Length: 428
Picture (cartoon, rainbow, N blue to C red):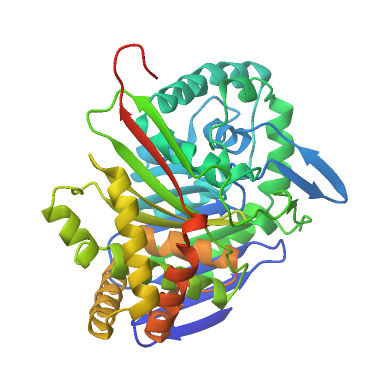
């Protein structure tokens, strides 16, 4: 077992890769009452086309999310989520564009709950009848999402940014696409993507790392399966498909979202550094204490709904900026002016140091959140770096790194903006 001490943050990480390929991360926290576990697969909504054992396969949109819904069904008719809850665990799951994760937190009977988690996630049970029944439930979820302005504006912008990458489509799929999902579809995708070699187990709490490894060995066996190779299509241009779109929706105030694609670092420490640089650069330019936000807020152009996001998933990367504004075009114009100022004058050294200290403080506080630590570690394992290196790596990010990120990312020709305006009768 590999043991790494992160003295600067007082954490120790235990790592093991089993013969079956499962990667295990354990962060012991002596004396804590609660422990957290996440069992995740490198499989999300964007993994629709892939190659395994030399065979290329195509699947309908929404399979990963559908599979997550059905994994809690057990052959004896029980539901794993109910069993975990009855056993004192707070459990759930989620599917994103690049990951499906099953997790729980409990204060006692942790090892028993861990065995249950590993067992039900690795033991598929589907019938045509139950799969058909689930279609109606997920179809309702899809229709509700289509009527949600926040969800709709997000995916509208992704379709403006990306020409063909599956990131542009909703993780849950469409009512039409999920109608093609059968029990056999779920069994086939589970066999490929839920193999231990494609998964990560992360645990944090008052646990013994060796015991976690022993339980995983006993529950999952030793057979090692070939890894699937996802196909996201040809590399996309950094230019958007559409630069500007306005639609009418039942919203009380105009909503806007501005985005730009990035060329993401693929794997390893460079990927971690890029993520840290992006987050720090956006805090500097657009954060709550930035001149950009404070001025536009004082002028009534922005409100507290304004925010930013960077995402690096499934071979795609992008920045999103959005919120409510009666003058979304002014926000875009002021963003361009702010970038032009960075290009000409650079960032303030004093503000850079303050923002870096604030970012370091936020990341240190986040270490108290077991869920955050475990999910960050899982993402890092899948992308080839250790999330616990973030503090030391952030200290090495320079003002010039942030300036370069901002001026390259927010070139005028790379920006796209969608606006949802309140609809009038007969519009939409």
